[in-house]
Length: 373
Image (tube, rainbow, N blue to C red; front, side, top):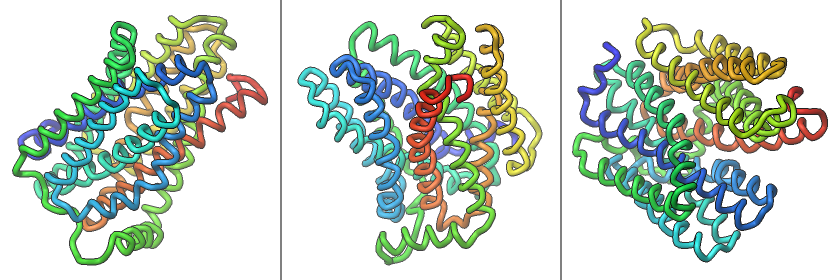
């Protein structure tokens, strides 16, 4: 299938639009919450707790909720989830003026849960919409470009809005974006029906999904290796600012430059992958992971900011290919009936092991230094 052929499928166009808006909303919301919590508490520990609340804890609950919702038509399930996120961010916007940390963390946890399930159901719905026309590979590559661009742009826009209008305005923008996503999907009559069938309970479906993964060696090994990769990638995130200031002896501008270089590498490689001739996703995964590792090696050895920027560009290029290949390889090996549940497990691996990586990166840096991490 040609690179842009999936866009002829109306359901995919709506799902891709919601996917882009989701990542933009994530950028606005995440930056605003981090700034809000740190400004009101002055505590790095509180900010770390916020990230764990939005990643690790929801990851434990998300597979069960996915198993509850995968029997609903996509046109009902996703709008309900995104309406819930809109309400949560609107509440956070109001709460920013009457700050109380436990309430902020509780709402952030609820949003983290809905976000994981929403991404899982979206991935499964994309597979259901384009598999009949043989477009799964092209559709995933298009979504990867959407994700990379939104991931590069969203946090930057969120930071500008927070700087200009404050955290409450940025949180309100996130709420509006989620409301727009709900309307976009609720008005699409061609979205796939329920992603699972049968009358068994959500507990039975959850257990059958786990048994399915354990029984399929390739899927099990993919998820296990991916979990390890997420840990080491996430370990760099919380200590990168320390690396810039302590190891490179530079400032905030250099930190922004490194983040921009990583985002640029991700966008460029995702565009290249979309235009490239088809290759086996499973074969590309180790090459993409090795490229990301080479980028980190350059950063560890970098004597100056320009070399560190080059490392970020290389690492971002590997990252822009890696995850879409993991998703494609998993989806190719999972029966349609189990797509939502396995995608839910994959999204939970992403979120849960991010938290483990955050802790690991801080621990290694405290025991040694940022270059060692």
